[in-house]
Image (cartoon, rainbow, N blue to C red):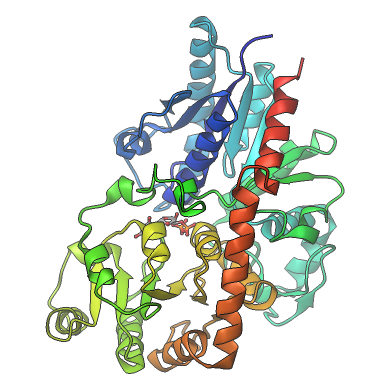
Length: 461
Ligand code: UDP
């Protein structure tokens, strides 16, 4: 039997690369050989740390000189499928020719064609679902019997739908791709293709970036799928205080300066509001102005990631930011940071987030309560889970124009960082942190699940 060699393929967006890379690293720890591959342009931006057993490779997505795939997700997905299918199949053939054949392909969401490529080459493949099991379950039901009901109610945001194995979700809490006015039909078609691929197998395994205790019931909710919790997929350094390696996760892709850690060091414990809306969403400046007012009103120090912060302007908003930074020293705006490191800093007391799944699971894993400001895709569902299932935060309400107003932000911060309700949330956050650490530790549920998976695929004929 050839030595196990897993090829981990990921869609080239930060929110996909981060968990897939952590997954690849965890696999290596189980003793198998792993190649981690993403698009040419994303590969160029990854500062890889050498690790025995882990190699890096790339495939063409048709945009080798670079494009932000989420800028034009719709056109991108079609081209990706066409070009990358060929490129990945060439890559796999090269490995065979070099005497290190791929024995299993692991692929992240939005790459359903990877399963077809693997099948054509006679190699087993497994989906790595980088969102929570709850979202996987929602999509599953949407494509297996509940699509018409959801579509018929989708102009009624407060209609409550009962999906098997899940708490009740209102329409507006569902992933945005399922709802109008979704401007992303190709994304929904790609999810549909993903489920068509899974439907070809009886009870396919799906590796999920969650852990058993976090979604105990949901993981078992769909009889037709074997969901395997292998998360939270964040660097072990942040889950096990004894580990020191690999602590520069996330930040090592784009980081420019680490002054913000020094700034955080100067603040009292649990006092700082950390704000980030992920690697894709951009809030309009008038909403950022509202947020800034809310922060100043709440009178708490804040560290805010604004990716456009490099292009400083003369607007009122930026003038006010500079005053907060320079004169009052209450705020710091950075274009990027090492997020898990920031969240783990003792001065951080709350995370105002778009609730992308990585940000949410990082927050849960290090025990920081949240104010959720979801924008699109799985973020509303994640925020709902944070607020009403895990109870570690609150969903900030937006006004009729979809804007978070300063007053509402202040209300949410006062609730999460002070008061009785907040105390409960902070306690819950610590409880989930401990359970996340337990799951990821040697012998914990995610560690056992991963080892059992590796054992099974290593023994496949
Ligand atoms: N991130 C980071 N530094 C930042 C902002 C984000 O390292 O300044 C990382 C964050 O830790 C997370 C990822 O980028 O791992 C964002 O993924 P998420 O799923 O939260 O949101 P997306 O970017 O996909 O919307």
